[in-house]
Image (cartoon, rainbow, N blue to C red; front, side):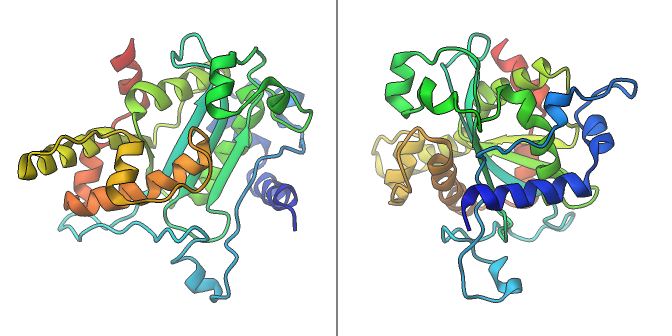
Length: 290
């Protein structure tokens, strides 16, 4: 079964479970405004959803994914059980500054694992991709201008919202994790929501793994006197994590960060409460770069 067919099956299930009324309200549209036809029509996106290829039983498959990434578990705390959905995500863009550029690729992985625990897609930014950017991430104008690629973020938003809702525990928050989230990933995401006249859902919280990596690096540097960096490539080298695809592409970077984030939280003895204390709202990330 092709990855396109797998996603279309999931997308159809999402649309049947969460009708247009839900998508409209969850995206922040006013009750008197209908979604535009081009947003709500069922298009055949090339978004990929990965289903684990495993001989384990259905129940066991939720405990190990196709990339060998185990579900994220924290040390038990006295106040809370682990209940938030943790989504590791990454984006590729036409450039670094969110005010001047657009998203060209989006990927995420749900650390609870199970079927359809990944989501990724290219996005047509409806602008030229600079040659220097295309050389770095291999995302070219020709790649994103195909008819089966979502045109701008507004085409993707209803499907993304419904997908996240399908992974979210009832009445529990969603924790989005990215490396340099505060200054890069989240400002881009907020900008795309603004272009859609929508708001980032109030129960979406964001954790930047870069400050956590810096805390760990500081402890390691103080212990042996070595100088280490906290960027994604340096953390991959520190933990001896092999690349699962080309660098500067969304899903390979998500896969790497899943491994890194689990190891960092273990090494820092981070509890679930501790992670929640690290979480911030999307508006706080925008303030940091304004």
